[in-house]
Length: 117
Length: 114
Image 1 (cartoon, each protein chain N blue to C red):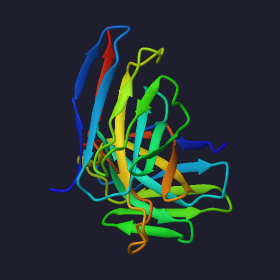
Image 2: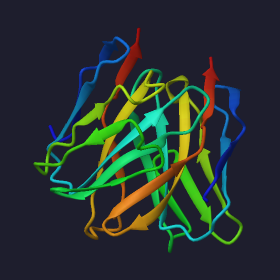
Image 3: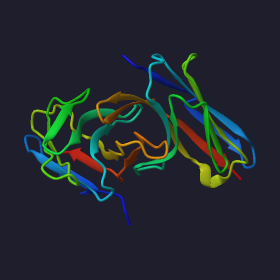
Image 4: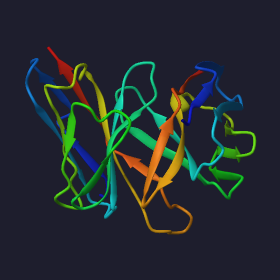
């Protein structure tokens, strides 16, 4: 089945540790995104990538890093510089070419919940 | 900066009722608008996508409308069912190259009771 796979589903981290969240898609989408969700707040964009080997900062990129070495993969590293990393992290991808009016529709994975102990 | 507001924040209705969820946005220069459903602890499921040139989209019991000039969208759910209970999120898209950057509202939490 085509879709977006995020792993791990739950992750616990000690303060000062870096962690990497995995995101893999087999939808052949060019663009991929990372969002953060906190209770009572809308999703906020961390980073996005339009093409392999290229990515741009979103609204809250500080303390995070990404890479895009393969079209299907867009891992997110939460570094020790992120002051409040406990959150629900969502990866998404989107169609970029015009296709029957569905251009720009985002599809999401099931999320990864990170807790800092 | 785009801001998206969803009203009400929570809604409880008996099964079978028709209902309307509201979404408003401050900048009318949008590329598209997307409605999502989120179950507790889960990811987002895309319900409907409306391009900026469109006025509405329909899928089954769902109908979404878009009025760019007034900065409003509504999601209409007909004949609600307990399985419709979830949080509904509205997001407006700004086109950036080939990517679609979404700004999200905080959602409406819907409970459909028996």
